[in-house]
Length: 417
Image 1 (cartoon, one colour):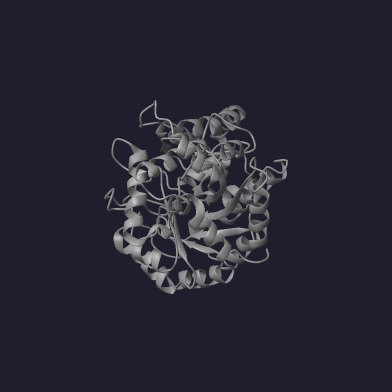
Image 2 (tube, helix red, strand yellow; image 1 turned 90 degrees about the vertical axis):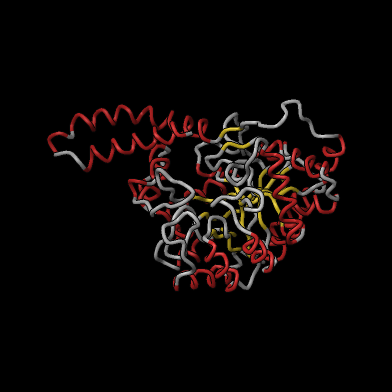
């Protein structure tokens, strides 16, 4: 994974030096070399980067197979995963791929009814879980991804344009799916899709979210633009502090700013769910206090299982649950820990359930988010099996595996686009 990120970074730094750091007379050779390289970079680098970064690395018993009871129960469930970054990559999501974690065919194979497709727009090079500054254009990993994947000048230069570029990719996936994939934007969309699933099992669906409110820029009207484009969840922070509030990985780790309070109110007016993943502790509590709708955390771990700065503490769990919200349990390190991530995922689900009740737990894989996971989306039946082995009731398993998020979408989605 680090090699792929380094390759993106080196290519981008070469471009920066060639364009910004050389005299006009010395630009000829670097530009010619870069032009030759680009023909290969645009073809090879995006695919190689994802292959290296988004890996499946099983750490459970290789002979592990879900029980017949788990397979039968899993087929009866409406499974929802709240978080994947699949729109970031250059794959055609209608084609089954050997790289990454999510595509339409693997969602269907895993009986995943609904996938949250979240949009990251800016990630600092050299990121860590403790303290990051806000990246500039040339110190942003996603600038390199956008450039190597040929998103166009607007999407390279503008975070709102990056957002809309990835939004359109999901709608293109829907148009080209032959009816096997549906984008859910409204209550009517959800009801119609769930009615179809009663007789059609080879279909799946998704909804749109944003990872980090820096995507808005300085213009609150972009909240309206994104809502009208079909975005239904808004993450307030990602790896750095922004104009809305603090990140748990930021420099100040502050709470809601005055602008942030306006964004919260405007997002809720549009029926968008606020997402606390990556938010600082102070931001979580201030946003939950201001919110008038349920608040979610789309992909998280808990400090009661894995005590590190990526995860939320008991007070934050209770604050989110008190709004009527749900927490999506991540499948990756450091949200999870220990020798077997599947066991840690089940531990986290049990921990939240014991603390605030099974009504507030969901799945939030972070698939395709530059992470290694023990199974891709076709293998989520392993979680159903793990929960059965821990004697969780069928009713509570149904809630955790998707029922809670289905309930929340039914309650909170707007009636019309």
